Amino acid sequence: MKRKVAFISEHASPLATLGGVDSGGQNVYVGELARHLVRTGYQVDIFTRWDNEKLPEVILWVPGVRVIHVPAGPKEVIAKEALLPFMTDFTANMISFIIAEKQPYPLIHSNFWMSALVALNIRDALQIPFVVTFHALGQVRKIYQGDDDKFPPERIEIEKRIVRDADHIIAECPQDLDDLVRYYAAEPSKITIIPCGFNPNEFYPVDRLLARMVLKLDPGKKYLLQLGRMVPRKGVDNVIRALGRLSAMHPDLNLLVVGGQEEDPQEGRDEEINRLREIAAAEGVSGRIHFAGRKSREILRYYYAAADIFITTPWYEPFGITPLEAMACGTPVIGSAVGGIKYSVEDGKTGCLVPPNNPQALADRIQQLITTPDTLDEMRRRSIRRANRLFTWSTIAEQVSDVYQRTIYTQKSADSSQAEITVAEQAIEEAIETLQAVKQSLIPAIMEAAGVLTRCFAANKKVLICGNGGSAAESQHMAAELVGRFELAYRRGLPAITLTADSAVVTAWSNDIGFDDVFARQVQAFGQKGDVLFCFSTSGQSPNIIQAVKMAVKKGMTCIALSGKGGGVLSQHAQVVITVPSFNVQRIQEAHLHILHTLCGFVETQLFGNKHNGRNGHAKVLHADGRSVNGFAKVTAHD
Image (tube, rainbow, N blue to C red; front, side, top):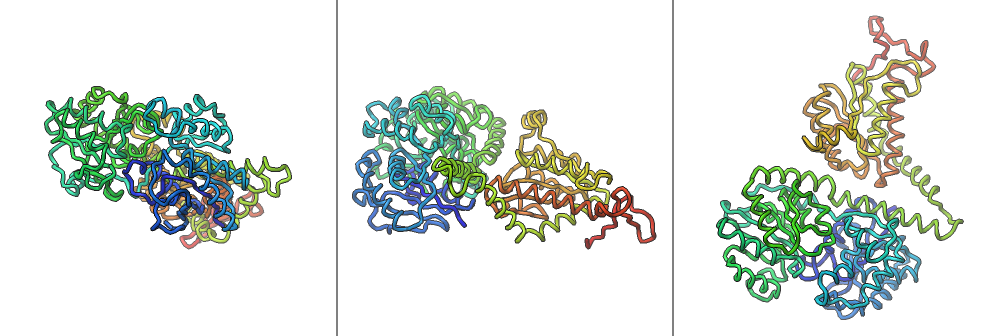
């Protein structure tokens, strides 16, 4: 049965066209997180304000995700700074919808402070716990904007109440957590840092010449890219002024500016773009800047790929999704040393960090990078690796799902010591359900893997085993059972090796060749044709496991993948795939342990007989001519 969760995002709907004043990162966050939570076993309802009378109340946006439009004020676009008076109606109408559906949500995930206010009032009415992602904090915004901040003054007091009373808070970066503790006296124990993400099906490397051909850009020029909402705090004026400082030195250097309220900004109706044009004229670079306007997400990857450098220099940024998208496309980032950008960009490795609102510092970094193409090339490679290792939406969704489950369990335990299902009971019931699902669907795959392992050992070949985190522990456990013993005390050891990822190896190789190749390098060194690579991965998405499998296939090895969460990319490369039908990491790991014990037991029985056969636990196994088979049972290709 699918788990349910309600999102509240009062002003940022996933249906909105991106690039306008109030349409940006939060819209992407809400939509992408919802879609990827569906893949982990959730049904998601997104509650957002009804701002267009032509839209129906409920839309099935994608399978598993509904967008529900809540009446709250006139059905027209209203600036988010003016929405607070309508949150009472939003709360009442959302409660009515939940009651009418007769299927209450176990949890609400609120996005932004007004959504959290709604969630807080719903919790008081319906006892539904809530998690909040603030996306921006009023106190920090005030520090930077002062009187230019147009939100109502009561925002900060409301945020303090939310911080105090929320069941859990998701901070988007370490700076976000520090700000919550410093300015709101938040309790660190109820905050989890989970960054934003990117979708690797949308953003990936594209050949630069091809991208420039698609966009009709000059292949011989150099391009900087600024992409996002066109509002003053994004610091686009800073980039224009930096370009002005470089114009004489680099006559082939140009700036692409993507975003804004209009698809064709030449019409002059966008006040911020008009302001930026005036700055460009004053700097003498009007002819070097192309204001491309608002673009669909399908075309954005070509802009990222066409650019030599992506630049984002806001003076305040809680996280920032665009740097991740640029990195995923292989474009180095120069970003402000603020907020989430400090977390996503590795200074000197995937790009550079500069102080905000400092055109000269930015110009110096641009000059440094565009004059050292080897540095740019290395940054491109590192950007792609870092983005895919840490920031895919599938990874983020797993982390958010863990927060949901902890919050729900904590709430159930707090409600009553006599709760019908305690945390322990729930975990055991889920484990039983998972193992029942394994029994129903995975026996053929398990037996196929057992046969591969048995034939490998019978042919005097070896098994290499790898995994990350908890899966690394299971890798070591499996090797111990095979080299040592499982049930038979006196049988000979079987050649099984755990590929290492200890601190010495990780720090040395990550510096020299990259963490993604830490296992592939060992497969290259130790693996031989006929050997087996056995991989543990709860998600099937770990880049270093996938690279190891690709290397093993090249060497003529057979690869067995023991995974979960749909199998991931790993399932596309391994020859034998065992995918536990669960999206819960703990349940997957429990099933993995059971399966590895089953495999070890099968291998022992096939090679040595059971513990009741033969002297000292050895089966009496002969060749067809009567000779012993080195203590192994005779195993044919059909076993």
